[in-house]
Each structure stands twice: as C-alpha cells, then as structure tokens.
Image (cartoon, rainbow, N blue to C red; front, side, top):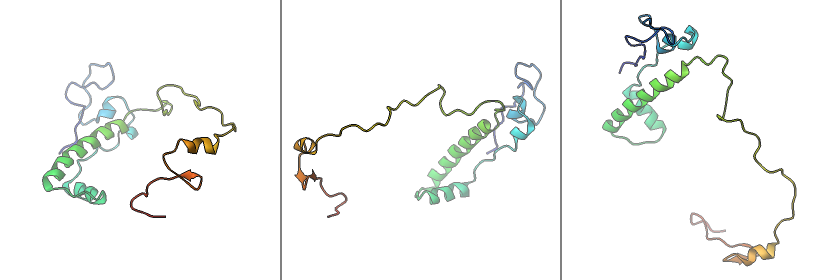
Length: 140
C-alpha cells in the first residue's frame, strides 16, 4: 500500500494560493510547513509487522483478520503521520480546549461518619467491618 498524499494535482503550494504544489512535495510542505517538519512519508505496515504486534498483544488472529488489520493500521499510521507533519511552531501545548482551574474542593479535615451508624446500614458485619463475599474464590 502506497502512502497517500494530499499534494495531489491542483493542491496549492501556499494556503489560499492558486498555484499548484511543487511536484513531489509532501502534504506538510504543500501546507507551508518547514521541511524539517515534513520528514519522510510513512510507509504501510507489513503483514509480518501486524502479525508481530498481534503476537505482542497476545491475540490469536487468522490470516484474514491480520490482512484486514494491516489495512486499518496502515490507514491509521497515515493519519498519525499527517498530524505529525502539521506546522505547530508558536502553538502552545494544551491538554484541554477550554481554560480550566482546580475544580476540587479544598482538602480540609472534617469529622468523619460514626462507625456504628455506617455499619448499621450494611447487609453483613463481622468484627466491626463490612463482611463481603470472597473474591476469585480466595479465603482469608
């Protein structure tokens, strides 16, 4: 599978320009990104690489499933490569699109609930603690 290129015929060299992008330019270069941001185009992932990733993930997949995943992963890598090539110089890093501040209450000590009152509402109590069924067949 060949990597896709958005620098197809009719793509502009500059945003808003009517000039075609230079032949052989990458989508990032056509969008005005510096050459170092453009890098080398991503190549399709091979069948053996998909099989290896499936093995690492402990997935037992048929050859048909691996071939289907090969196409999906190749497409995903092309999209990630397009994002990697975006010109982001001067764009501050963000973790959220809206400004946020600490939305938690202040951590101040307060009186806790009375143990007897809390345990009174429990379905089962043993030694002043909640009694719960064993987990995964384990016994204390």
